[in-house]
Image (cartoon, rainbow, N blue to C red):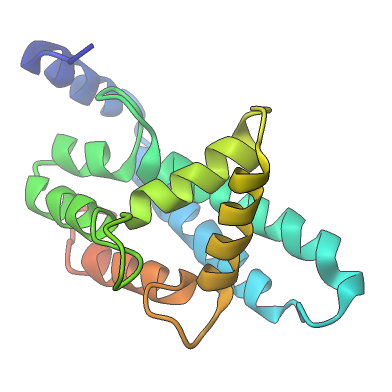
Length: 171
């Protein structure tokens, strides 16, 4: 169901009922970067770190999903926050960035890959197939590999660069 312009305007007005929303956005972005840095510190070659890695990855992915990947026109994503503040250009840049392919050999968008992992394995208790598990393992290996393009580090750096170009995130 599509949201009308009138409904979006009402949602944007709701944003401004929360005077600390700008600070919350900045805090959530700081937490996202902190979680990613913690994730990078975990030695994944040591099998005893598996649980810590998965817990930290899940924590990162849940916040990433909430900030950038939520469905619907009335969710409190950063893109909607930026539009409410009058910065549709930055919101569009974020969406364009998330819609670019993860792999050079596939048209799978970054957004779809991250949402697949989050929705199938973290945020919902959906039934999974052997194929789903294989895809999730391959995607997570790609995301954590510093030698691949569009790994988690480059994705987060790309989004941070887009956000830094906008003064509206914290104002």
